[in-house]
Length: 123
Image (cartoon, rainbow, N blue to C red):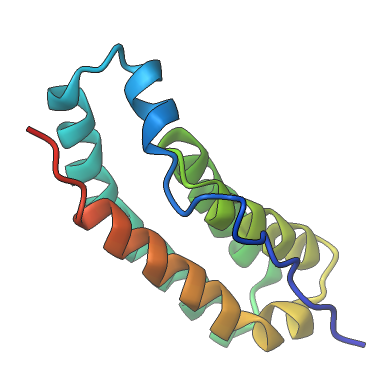
């Protein structure tokens, strides 16, 4: 039986800009560099999750979800980090059905983060 991703709820921000600025001492130049790295490295990582899922490779799905979770946690994307954690746990348990059934929700969270990070106005 397939499981459903937890809804992080509206109280959890897509991107926690306040935490990021505090963590990096308000240095928007560092944040801009991190934003660019995120936008460069995360799309292929998310695609690798989908490719591994299509191939039925639970270990690879778990590893890629774990990597994406870490990138999201580093860049202050708590919602996507949470859903990646769930996908990782399901994949480690061999439950690719739950990951597949929740791919649309995972994609929606990813799209929100990708858009929010790409729209950060750092100067």
